[in-house]
Image 1 (cartoon, rainbow, N blue to C red):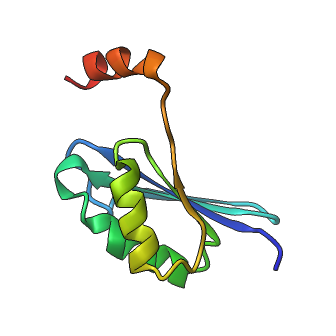
Image 2: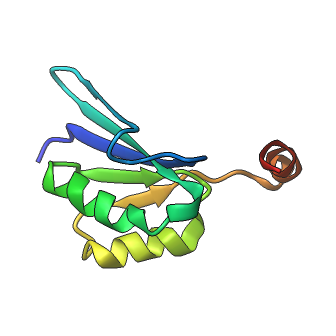
Length: 101
């Protein structure tokens, strides 16, 4: 199978995944990004399942989900596609806390 479909799910304030999404498509790749509200992280499960049903071969979650949500998505999707996440090193933690506080 040739890689041609990638998805990224991110968190932000007051985002609605039905409305806050975008698709970039070329002749070689489809990239879908979907935003979910900080207060509704559990929506990531249904969004991941939807994206896989639409052909996503790999899903990446923003760092705000953390390893627990990555594991939940993997389990809920029966490991059908690789699921990973963005990570920040220790040097970025204070600036991130300052930014998001």
